[in-house]
Length: 293
Image (cartoon, rainbow, N blue to C red; front, side, top):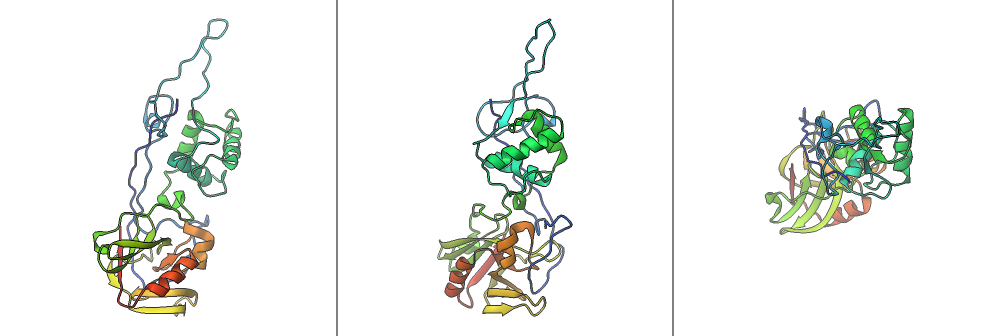
């Protein structure tokens, strides 16, 4: 039996300061930059086969409930331990697999970012984790392995689940439903280009760090610069559409290369150069910009 679906929880980070001008922001000592401000978490407690304590909650959304492991009798009359319940294995797909991969990434057993598919690389990562800790080396993520992995890691934030983008776009803010709008969601880290309530295009975006947060609110495009160079950081900001002081929507080669393991100094970075080039050609000075949670 596989365990039931995992509940979602919320995690919050507060913005500390506002700046003008932006460019790529270096990560922490591990090369990672946490979310700029208040990224919504989506994780619940982990499933196990014990049916007891904190580790007994949650599941993988594949039906069935937690059940205690029964120890079958062995020859000679004494009980023997039953194999741990397998939660996920090669070929499985879904958000729960993505969360497990993010945790494996945290402990450096899975180098590639989460994909949501339990593939050959995930099998090898689990084998390595199991072997290092004296667990049966199966490559399957069973309840015992999962409990051990959970104790060594933290609940992944959204930026860890989708480090290179691809998350579903959030529902548009009501303020985006009229006129020509750059509708920017910090929750899903996406930008919708909307005209009279219709989505014309969508793209992945990232924001400033917690020390250089992207401002929230309703603004308007006041200046466009196709080949802009930051006067503060002296870095390239192609297809810049300024909306609040030195903060702009623009293409970022660093975002394209490093994903959410980096951050801007307040701008809205776009990962896809082709999409932002098309957006730049359509947006006019005076068009609305809405940055929201």
